[in-house]
Image (cartoon, rainbow, N blue to C red):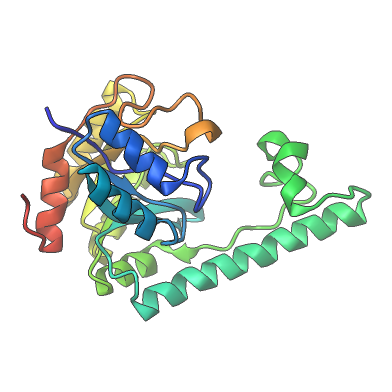
Length: 259
């Protein structure tokens, strides 16, 4: 089976590796294709695409958007979108600006409570967001674009929206199905059916949900380099295998010729 990885992160967002290093590693591992899907930014894509040309590996331009549905943060992957699309960029800029303002508010609350901390210190000083988690004293609710709006923006930019890691959200079975139904109604085209942390049973459930809602299968490791050292590129925690056929299906939905 020709393997791929359609969910990776670089230094452009919260990964530890440069975009070129991720692509080079994917090529060295024998992957046929790799997608760079940094959080809410396209900044790493030019470097990744250039590295793909040098290394002889297919690089899929992607992004991971933080959205909200049913009061829960839901992540949406996008592939093959026009990265110059003004409306999509405006949506992403708004989300980033809102989050920057949120972070500054939390830092100010910490200062007011006697914690002389900067944004650069946050993760080191409070591992796991102990004092910044939901319901904690210094927590400020995170702003996200509604899931349906993000899907429509990606589709309008020629992209293929794929709902990410559906078992990471605090949904029961009925809520998960309702979220996917809403995503499909808004124009989502795929769902991750293979992912690093899925159990075999969850993979089967995800495949059944994909079929139920007419969503194409996708999959990836969610590689972050040293930021998540237990997750390897292409294989997750060792057992992940994502076939090239998944990418072929997404390319067909995007109107790209599969070679």
